[in-house]
Length: 111
Length: 113
Image 1 (cartoon, helix red, strand yellow):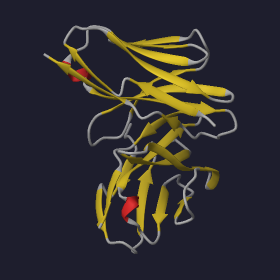
Image 2 (spheres, chains in turn cyan, green):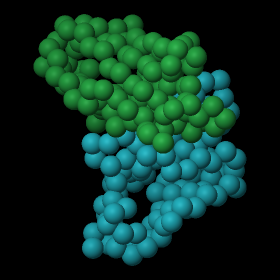
Image 3 (cartoon, one colour):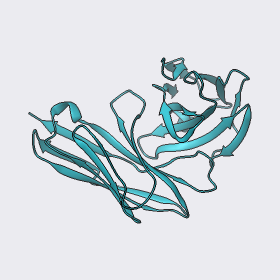
Image 4 (cartoon, one colour):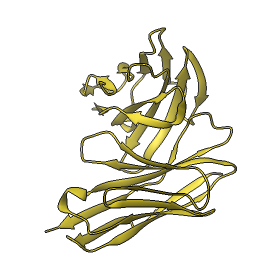
């Protein structure tokens, strides 16, 4: 059975304190791994798609990387506006377009 | 370009009633997926439609159903509501040439009392 596990569940950082969020996955035939950001009361906002091991994507202070077993979302010098829940999802071959989500990491960045 | 829109945004229903939620995808997007989000289970896939055909379905009881119209707009219906159906229902649409990237709407918050 496909599984997506995110850690830590919650993370509190000081502004400027860099860190990484982890997404471990087991899936039969990875079609893609996705990172989303979700603010309270809103739908998830698409950040990145990674398709193969070794791939990296960057956007502002965020950088996503992918290996055969896990993905990391690195946050460099975070700001309070980066506070949100970060969701990881995988799409497996044969699952159509269904996304299998992890439970998310709730990030709080304090000034 | 306008994003995914969902109506209504908030809904309160009583156990045993039924409810219909609506989703309008981004213009040009033909694939629409529905997800249920709860604090305990997180985001769970309900079903996905493309060109008015259901292509994939998650592990939800038959009380949950959906459809897609020729203009790609989609509706989902939940019959005989239970307290456990209280959740945020999210709709997502996909671009034709990037089928794996899904763009989510703001969701419909359903409360069953």
